Image 1: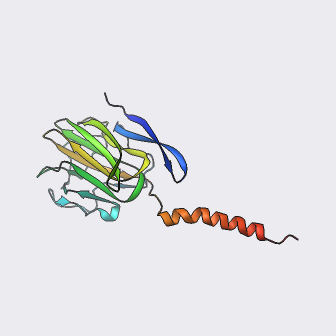
Image 2: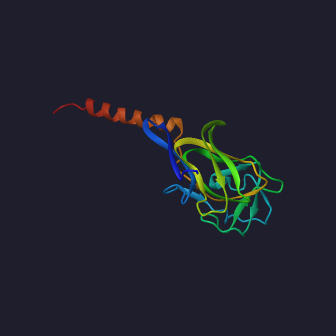
Image 3: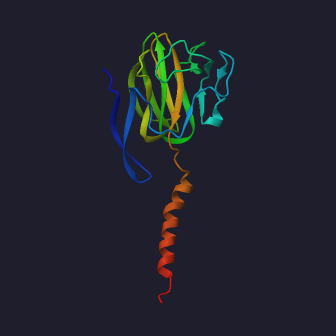
Length: 199
């Protein structure tokens, strides 16, 4: 019904054409993430609201999700400490990244099964979105690659609780000033080599 990984629109990242893809009920997340937030450290008491507590690891949540020290539902990507969406139920909610990135994925399960919409945003503007079903299956990974975004929004329709675990974060986009310095530096090197006096 839903594809495991679907190529979608083309994009341009720092002048290099790329293809964006969604990870929809995947058996794995993104390849070689730069970091993964597992929720094992720091640890909190069960049901502690979590919003900015993992900001040093690169993510925050709005509204607050709730800490769970263990998972009664074991699925691929869901193990040990994780976050859940109730009580009260957080729907919709967002995973916010500290800086724009090119890829990210997270593991999620739900019982009962729910239809969901997962949306990548940059500065609050929708960049990419897909509809899916979140359940207790082992293919529990969702995310985006090949686009630039700083938020993943999740909304769902059923009276259920989601679990979120192992948020994988891909490469950060350089600050605009840093990205501009690279070509200028190369031009400077070319100028120096041209100005060298011939012997």
